[in-house]
Each structure stands twice: as C-alpha cells, then as structure tokens.
Image 1 (cartoon, helix red, strand yellow):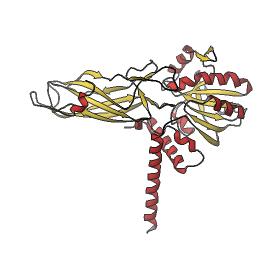
Image 2 (spheres, chains in turn red, blue; image 1 turned 90 degrees about the vertical axis):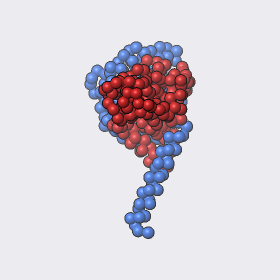
Image 3 (cartoon, helix red, strand yellow; image 1 turned 180 degrees about the vertical axis):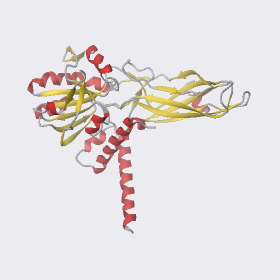
Image 4 (spheres, chains in turn purple, brown; image 1 turned 90 degrees about the horizontal axis):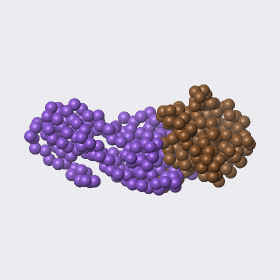
Length: 190
Length: 183
C-alpha cells in the first residue's frame, strides 16, 4: 500500500517525465530527482528455513536495493535529527522477536554537508531473528513488516516513507525436519 | 490500418517514451536543477505560521519572495540555511523576503525548537533563522505543482508571478543574480 504522499510524489515525477518527453524549455529540469520515495528502494524478503518446526529459531531477511543515485540514513545516523532506517515486524501470535540486526552504515561525505553522514548505499540486508513457540499456528503464517527510510541524492531529499512488506513462514509440528533456504542471503554479514 | 488501431500504437509509443524519460531521469547523475517557471501566477495559498495564524502569499505581493520548502531532517536543507539568512539580511530592506515552509510532519513541534536552538555561521557571525517560517503541507505543495525533493525553492516576483523554481540546494551566485534581477 502506497501512501497519499508517495502518490503525490509519483504524480509529480510523472509530470516531470512528461516535461522531459516534450523536451521543451525546461530541459534542465530533466536532471531533477524524478523518483518517488517508494521507487528509490526495491526490497525482497526471505525466510531462512522451510518449514520451521515449532520451538525453533529462524530468521527473516529484508534485502533493500537502493537506487545508485541515492543513499538512505543508516539505522544509527550521524545526528539525532536524521531519520533512521528501521524494519518493524508485526508479529502474529506464537512468533517472538529475539533481535533485529542492522548492518553498520558507512561514513560518506556529500557536497551539501561539512561532515560525513552515516548512510546505506547499494544493497543492504536487514535481519530479524525470530522464534516459533510451541503453540504457533501451523501452516503458512504471514508476518507484516514495515521498512521505513528517508532517502536523499547528492542535492535533495525525499520525505520519509513506510513500505509495507510481508514474509511468509511455513510452521510445522515440533520435531519436523526443516532445511535452510537462501543460505547466500543469511550468510552475508555473519 | 484502422484509425482505432493507429491510435492504440500512438498511445503505446507515448507510454514507452514517457517510461524511457522517467528511467533516464532516475539514472542520470543528479544535480540541483533550475527551471524557468514561465511567469506562472503564484498559487493562492495560505500557510499556517508558527503562531497559529495564516500567512498568505497574496499578503506578500509587492515584495520579491523566495519560498523555500525544507525540513529539519533534511541535511541539504540545513546546509543552505546560512545562505538564506544571508539573503534575508542583504535584501530585506530592498523589498525581498524569504519564506521558509517546513514540511516536517509534526509541524511546529519540530520546527519551533529547531529555530530557537540552532545558530548558523553567516559570514562569520552566529545567526538564527530570522526570516518568516511557516508550515507547508501536501495540499500547498500540490498547488505549486508538487515537490520532487527538498529543498525546493520558488522565486516570486513583486507582482505575484513564480519566475523560477530551484530543486536542490540553491547556488549562491545564481540566486543572488536572480533576486537582484527582480528588485
């Protein structure tokens, strides 16, 4: 679900694309950041085990691929006024959050700032460490996750946005054998 | 080829062109951009000011106005504040005013302490944001044609026409030249 604010940015971006097509007097406006906040990051969600037996730990990874012209604040940005990147699960009954793991950002200098900013660029993987209780519902269980970030390019910033994501985990009876899936995603950063 | 089929191809081509343009914009190296706004009339908007009252653009007619959409969480916005304070200092007596429109979701709750707690180095002097600050909103920015990012500024002539739009941090030489051309 995309917010009304994101829709407004999309319409503004579409209008800019229209100007670019027309190619007229506003040619320099083609250099403007024509992405909406939601378009800046493409996210994929992975679950580490299938199935997950009741009583077992598992992980959910959110892989965020950030448009190369943009960066987003890390989870621990350089200053308190900057909006951190967060992943927030809404856990169904029977699932418990053990930890949220954010990779460190990297300090990067921008022309608009005297000091380096701690940011994410490129591909970033966030992880949620979870436990399925002995009473967790069996079968496919959906975990809604909200990815919140605020992105900028080298000259301008987009407003903060909350992107709704979903992980689906298959819960099996206690003692059921599960196998690791997407190990390449879950090995990263370990 | 039927007329309907022909129109369909035209629509497809237009859609492909628009998509291509959008992709090209998204992948370009992004810089601050300026566009001549072709003397569009200023939108009929009233901003909420920090005292809870209204500040309408119409009430500023007769002055050259630089409307600057910004936010406290926006680093490039913060970086251009000293320049904007300097513009206010330099040109206020000549019929110019800055109008800073904050896009913070929580409005005065964030903006008030920001204004009072922060001092900026303006030509070696520590100064506060002493120009008028108001609260922007999506409804207001829609009337300006929508924001593509912050900071975004609009230069408005004495007779209430938008003469230029700046996306990104304004260039000091450019904005000085543009303001002086309107005074």
